[in-house]
Image 1 (tube, rainbow, N blue to C red):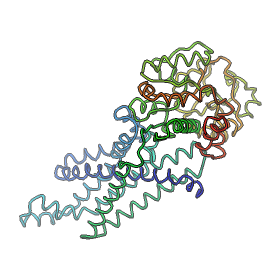
Image 2 (cartoon, rainbow, N blue to C red):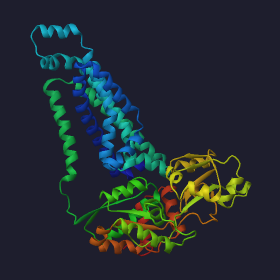
Image 3 (cartoon, rainbow, N blue to C red):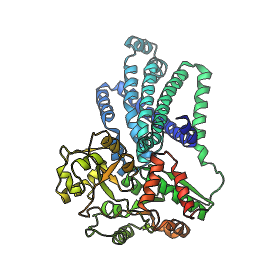
Image 4 (cartoon, rainbow, N blue to C red):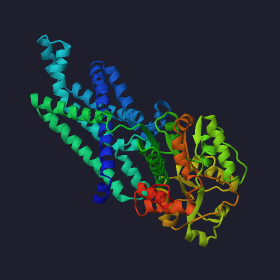
Length: 504
C-alpha cells in the first residue's frame, strides 16, 4: 500500500485537497442556511416541526438518487456534488441549533428581559453562547457525515478520495481501496479534532487560529488560478470507468503532446458512465473522450439507429458519423478492435451444460445474471438479448468490477462483458457466441465537438494515427497489464505507442 501511495502521491494529494474543499464549502454553506433558519424557527415554533421533517426527508434520500436528479439541472461535476452535500448537512446543523436554543432555561431569558435587554442582545449574549456546544456538535456531525458522503462525488466527475476507492474496485486493487478509505476516515477524525480544538480556544487565540485556517483554505483554493508556465492551450480529455478508456486517453494525451508540445492536457479517468461523459462534452466541461461506434448508434442517437442484422464495421461507423453530425460533433477514424458486448459464463458451467451460444443459456438450470445497470437498461443490452434469444433470466444489477468477482464466487453464473476485458482471461470465463449477430460493432473513436475539431486540425491528425490499429488481443493484453499486473495506464499506453513507432 505504501508503494502504491508513493507512486500516486501527486494524485492522492490532489484528491485529498478536492475532498477537503468539497467538505468545507458544503458545511459552511449549510451552516449559513441552517443556523439562521433555526434561530428564526425557535421564535416561530409552529414551523419548527415542519422544518425538522423537511430536513429529515432530505437526509433519507439516497445520495445516488440526489446526484442523478441534479445532473439534468446543473450538470455533472462540483456544482451537483456540492448541492447534494449541502442537503445532507442541513439536518444535523439545523436540529442541533434549534434544540440548543430551545434548551436555554426560560428563567435565564426572563432575567435578561427584566434587565431590559433587547432580543438581539439576548440572542447574542445569552442564547447563542449557551447553545454553542450543541451547535458545534451539529457542525461536527455534519462534517463527518459529509466526508463520508463526498466519496460518491467522484461518480459525477467532482473528484475527491472516492476516485481511489472506485479505481480500486474497478481494478480489483485492495491497496487503492484502502488508501481512499483510510484517508477518508483519517480526514473525518482530524476534522473533528480541529473543530474541538478551535472551540476550546478563547479570545484572540481562537480568532487567530480561525483566520489562519481560513487563509490557508482560501489560499490553497486560489493557488491554481495563478499562472504557472504558460501553455498555449488547455485540453481536457476524460474517460469512462475502466482500464481501457484510461489507456486510450493516455494514448490521446501522448500523441497530442507530441504534435503540440505547448498544449496543457488535463486527464480525467474514471469520469463516469456514457451519459455523464456525453453531458460533459456538450457543456464544454471536457473536450475529448473515447466512445464506441455501436454506443453512438444505439444509446446516444435519439431514437436509436436500427442497423441491419450483422452490420459490419464500415456500416456502423457511417451510421455513427451521421448521428454525431446532427449534434455538431466529430468522430476520428475508428480503431481496429471491436469491443462489442458479450455474454460470458464460467468454463465449468460451459462444459457441464454444453453452453456455446447465447441461446444455449435456456439449458442452464438456476441461471442468475449479474450485469451492469447500463447493460440492463440499454436497448442493445439485456432487454434486446432476451427478446432476440427468447430468454427470461433472473438478473441483479452489479458494479462493473464486482460482477466478475460475483461469477468467480458462484454468486451469479451469467455476466455481461466487453470483448477485450482482461477479466475474461483472469477469471477463466467463456464468451458465448452471438450467433444471431445481435450486438453491433463497437470500434473505438475519439468524440469531440465539430468546432473543436475544426479549430484543432493537428489534434485530429495526431489522434487519427491510431486509426486501424490495436487488435482485440493487444487491447486485452493492455487491460490485463493494468488490471492484473497493476501497471500504470500511462506506462502501458506509451509502451504500445513506442513499440509501434507512433511516439518518439
